[in-house]
Length: 216
Ligand SMILES: Nc1ncnc2c1ncn2[C@@H]1O[C@H](COP(=O)(O)OP(=O)(O)O)[C@@H](O)[C@H]1O
Ligand SMILES: Cc1cn([C@H]2C[C@H](O)[C@@H](COP(=O)(O)OP(=O)(O)O)O2)c(=O)[nH]c1=O
Picture 1 (cartoon, rainbow, N blue to C red):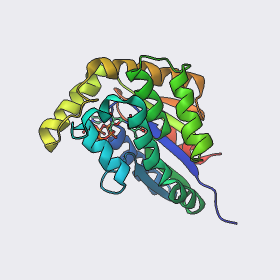
Picture 2 (spheres, protein in one colour):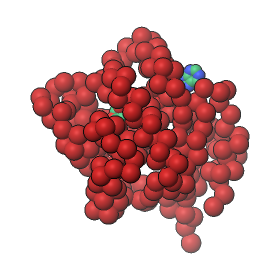
Picture 3 (cartoon, helix red, strand yellow):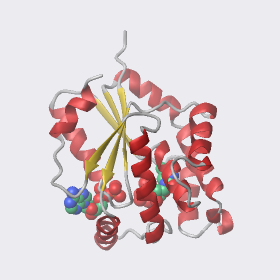
């Protein structure tokens, strides 16, 4: 029988250090002999919906950006196109590690609408992506938690060093603040899966997380 891998998701604000943690976890898992594969959403350059998201976040899609539901449908369609691939990966890897997944849609959309995690929007995202699009549920979600100011500083630093413009969500401090609060609530409620909160301001220590990622 083929192995059934674990779907592990890293969530957090723009600039929290998700990409950095994904790399550190991948290296540590591989060093332990685990079969691990990674992915990131949106799948820019790979999926037309993700490329439309990029257009929208950089002001090239008119008033579509203003629509929270419209934006969320684009993110969700990108994931829908990846669902079969994720399922196949779960059959051949021990860990499938994703940088952002369904909870990003829930947290950013609710924050834009000034709703909380128990509001209608989060449930709308769950109904769309889980019930209707049949996306695989995560086994574990890691919330990489940093104060908004730290995330903003890191995003600004990356903008300066990597020639990468900040988009309309990243430049909205109030949105990031509210989004961080919704993430905390989603983690506390165990939305879609168990969550582990990781302190993104402390020295990154991945060892304590490995057992959680590898045992069922
Ligand atoms: N623990 C950390 N301490 C200091 N800087 C960090 C840390 N983690 C990430 N960074 C830096 O912050 C910036 C954003 O990190 P990144 O992993 O790209 O964030 P994200 O994927 O969450 O947007 C990068 O320049 C990265 O080098
Ligand atoms: C994946 C995803 C991202 N987002 C938001 C979070 C980010 O602010 C923005 C872009 O995603 P991000 O992964 O941060 O891309 P970039 O490499 O450009 O930083 O989209 C959603 O609102 N819903 C989603 O489903």
